[in-house]
Image (tube, rainbow, N blue to C red; front, top):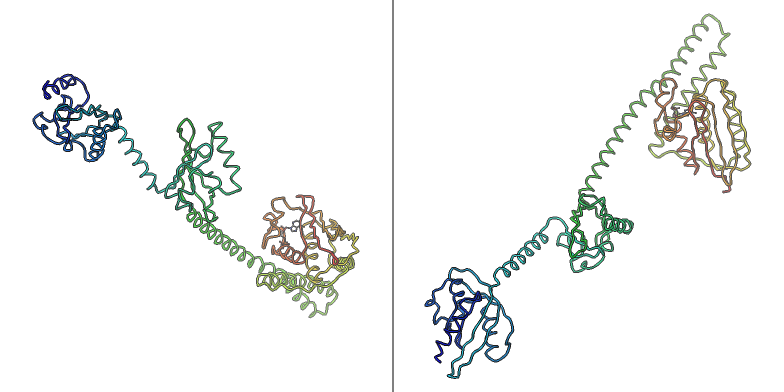
Length: 497
Ligand code: ADP
């Protein structure tokens, strides 16, 4: 049988198949192709006759085609599938896979036959998905936010360049490691784990699809503030969590600084306002005793001219009382400026507190005639104090007790020892102080609003007292009920403690 006819017969058989079939001579020259080949690749039969297969194989596949054919012709690789791509006349690429057989004729002629299935659709889909993956990769790589993906076991699956930049760890350092061991502060790790657990079992989370600001840790240990939003997705029947993270540390710092500046500005504005109020109150307070003293001086001059001296003693007492008030006010003002310039100095000496209190209350008995003063002291220990300053503190507490309670109300001064401390309590049955004001009364210039017009004062007595007590390593505090009275407590360490 003639070789050409033999081929034609086989070609007839295969013309109806959808496979691409071609016969090549030993050196790769096309001998014959089937209908599918012709119709798809859009060449006429005579355009391909005598041409080398390489002219139709896509350049990327030429070497592989060549190698495979070689193998087959050497009697190896029979039945192995291989893949190739042919280019149509119009440039369209056909991806094909199949096998090559080798025929050897007795007359010395040999050729190969390729039977190839069209897998263009599948290959294209694969190429598209590869392209999509590549595109996705590019997006992840170039994302302006850090992108981190973890699985249900908290293991890192994705860590993009921005994440590397924000947290200092390279992708290689993080892959498959537990996220919370990398960037979550130790004190938040349990909360993170519990949150993830809750999310996995209930699907509920505070942070899914929300942006939250949370602290995080950089590789070098420094703390960051990040804006975090998380979404979850299913992959291989398991949940994965995708986090978008933005480093907002600097922004937060600027915000805090701005807020601090604002706070400072507000504080200095309030202080300024308080100072202005203080000046106007202080001038008023100073003017009142001065006016009284001046009135008595004039009265005395007029009576002196008339030779009438019988009321002089009473006038002098009044003037002395007002001078005392003036001295007290000036003293407070001087002390406040001393505190402000850090020049409040003390002269500590060992003092018998029991005697000190008896002397003080004894002296005050003469001055305070409006309220009975009662001293109950069980003190045996000595204390190490600046007697002048402590006298100032107790005088202030007792005169407040007088000022803020009605005439006749008993003022009690109780002193006792507990462990290595002495406690002195000054109690009155006066107007009392509301709970929300109790801490504030120790602030500079603070005065309870309702009392402003009714009672004179500068709002520095208790501020000064607290400062002095603190400088004695002591404490001062209040117990008070509105309408029932107040007790001011002072604790001081005993001299041998
Ligand atoms: P002031 O010169 O105004 O008395 P202080 O610093 O001594 O200044 O007291 C601050 C504020 O605390 C007073 O204005 C008053 O409202 C309140 N206060 C102090 N002591 C008493 C007290 N014994 N009873 C009621 N309120 C008091």
